[in-house]
Amino acid sequence: MSRRRTLLHDSSDEEYNEELDDIAHIAATVLTASAEEARLRRAEAHLHNRHYLCRPQLLPNPCKSTPWQALYHSQNDRAFITTMGIDCATF
Image 1 (cartoon, rainbow, N blue to C red):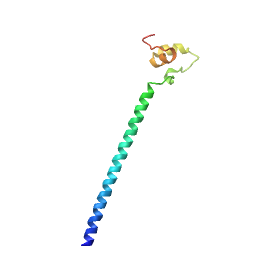
Image 2 (tube, one colour):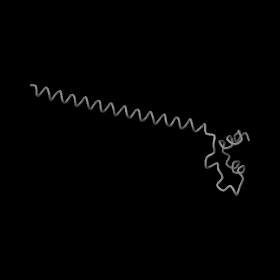
Image 3 (cartoon, rainbow, N blue to C red):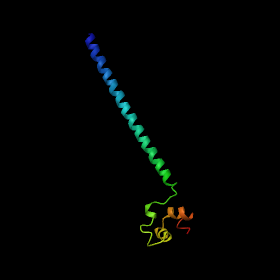
Image 4 (spheres, rainbow, N blue to C red):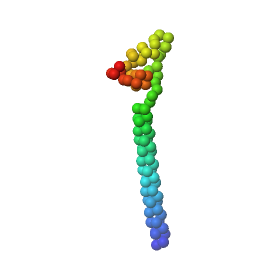
């Protein structure tokens, strides 16, 4: 009888350990997803606070046109606001 009780006890311990493993995997998944969501929100918030020009707003060949001409032809609000403080529509 004691051997049978030991086998039952061992199987319930295994089930308990498997359940704990499942809970740990779920917790890790939730934490990873939450961290990724927080990273994306920070990146989106940072995107609106940029005050510098990116490669598309820079001149490909500065010898052929002036910076003002490139800026005007790009009609990029962020570039206009960064350099002049007004957007394209206001200009």
